[in-house]
Length: 398
Ligand code: PLP
Image 1: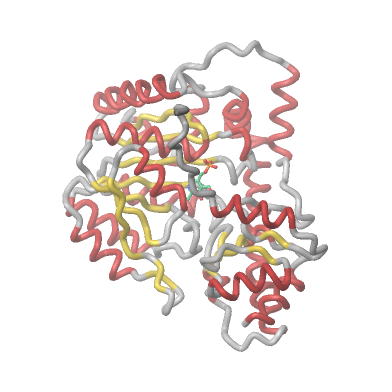
Image 2: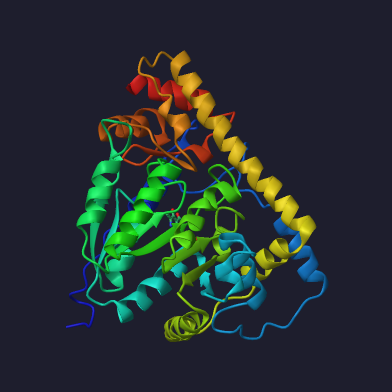
């Protein structure tokens, strides 16, 4: 028999399957709200001006492409630390953070997961219920058993915070807790600063291992506001992991730019951690690619380009907020009785709309409006042209 005779077909990625269905749909009014991508008001994936300007600079002084160091471009890693932890923070100044360039946020998570498996092999991983699809698969692929902590409360249209805290307080020491630093995917519901404090206290009291996934910094309330949670973990004196993604905040999805940072108790510890992270990388893909990180480092370290980036990021954030507010208004105008105001309370690209699987299926089959069966819609794919159509379609299935 062939070597592959018994190979089973892997399940299709549900979101990619939705995209295929969308592409095949002949409906001229179709709208794809299933994606995890920010589109501008013309429905186009933006190329940020700061990125184009950095690329122009890089092209003007083209360089040969040698191998990068295993942990990536030093100036990039330093810029990531400054952005995520604050360049003046005691942990950065004291050299207590090991940061490596990663292949997007996913790559940062995976390097962290593989490293954790070496130092904490028997631990369980807890992710939010629900969470980004890939969290479970990624930590399982690294060899961990993955469980969940309660998060979304459908009846309340919010977070089951008591349930979440109870789960953390019941977790054995060493449990790895994956937390969305901001703009929770898929629900859009974030913890309040007060709730974050309680989470940090529980993690500290129980000796849990926090792994913060920060894929949307700047998409919620602002770069500093969305990153504020990092300060709480630093202040608590915890060891923790942070994965960073620039896919959304720089609209650099295909360049795979991200990072992993591990905060340790001392510089000496961080140096040893870094040496192990490098081993994980070396045995997986040897070293990261040059272009995307070069672009991000150029933007973050040039005062003018950084200013431009912050403005462009603010533009994306504000457009999302406008779409949220406009959707709520249009739903009301279209006759939806129920108060949909919760949509403006949610943060980031996604909204748990509260629509049922049946309603989501009707949206697709009758109106060509594609969202995920869970009720998740990508608010960042709404625009001034498709908003009326989407609101009226939702009103018709409500
Ligand atoms: N983490 C979360 C919560 C995400 O939503 C995503 C992207 O959708 C990622 C990580 C991965 O980001 P990247 O595309 O940079 O790998």
